[in-house]
Amino acid sequence: MLEQIKLGALISSLVYSVVGVLIFWVCFLLIDKLTPYHLWKELVDEHNIALAILLAGIALGICVIVASAIH
Image 1 (spheres, rainbow, N blue to C red):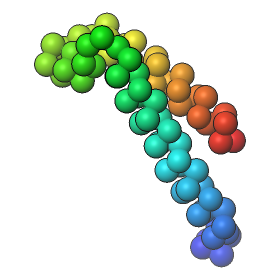
Image 2: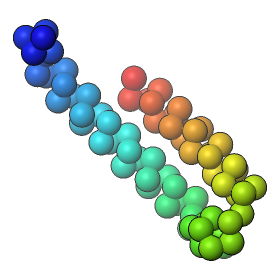
Image 3: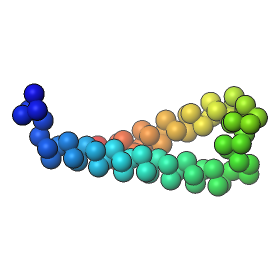
């Protein structure tokens, strides 16, 4: 089975995965800086469910864009 996995494809997949996660994290931090309140505090301390749902939608949108760009 290991003979079937090409090393170049494995390394490039890992690199693209790391790049995608970094781009996502930078976008999330940028959104956190642009909003007038601290997102993490609102989510964890205040238990703001509506904000959690909104951020989940934003996260999925960013992930789709990053995945499309990398693909």
